[in-house]
Image 1 (cartoon, rainbow, N blue to C red):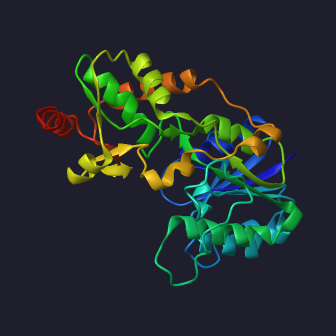
Image 2: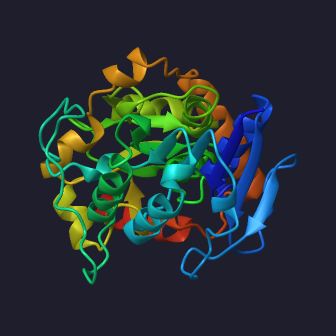
Image 3: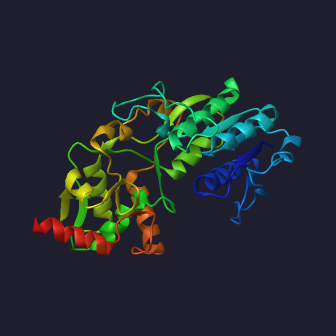
Length: 323
């Protein structure tokens, strides 16, 4: 039986990867801290990756596959050092945030990367991922590095894609505030498509794992239609939004998926290697429906990690309409 170790296995993506491997008939072990459960039918070992000797129990075994998604380079490097000679294959889930050029469109896996993080550096996500990739790359032909873009789907803890489903659903016939849409694009991958790609078949090399780039206006239109929104879309310019303390991309008081003009390449990466490797995409409308159902179940007006509260959005709309 295929022996798989997931470094994680209790989170949003890593849990899905563990389930996919389990469903493929593998014997799956998960190493995670905290009190969240691992998927049924897998073995959960509790361990803090900051603790000395955390991998000692695992180094007694041989693995056919190890999967790691950590965004801390020191964790990845320590795991490779402890377990690299105990596995036939290693998959690392990196990020397209490793690329230094966010302006060029159609960037493929050969694009220049950020400098790798060094010990003692202030934390920077992209540089941490680059350093982690370097550690995994020492395994040469046994390594597979996957660079997802924006991962979306039901239960997404970042709330970025889900914000728009909630915003349109809660507004009904009232206006919804959006950034200027002309020339802007969006590029996403469903979490279940990514998990399916990462489990069941061992691949090699480096792959951008992301869906096709599409106009942001089209994406929002499809979410809006599924949510049944019939109100107006009120577009606000970048300078106006910035002047009113609305943030790009994510976080409190933000408009998710909105990016600065000098980052237009960030949501227009090349995905041909993913397609060539057998990566698949479920219909976008199916993803939208799943996210909308999830947002309604969790509460359209709940506190979230990204977006605008409806009362803040209304206040901004009133100010915009009065100018």
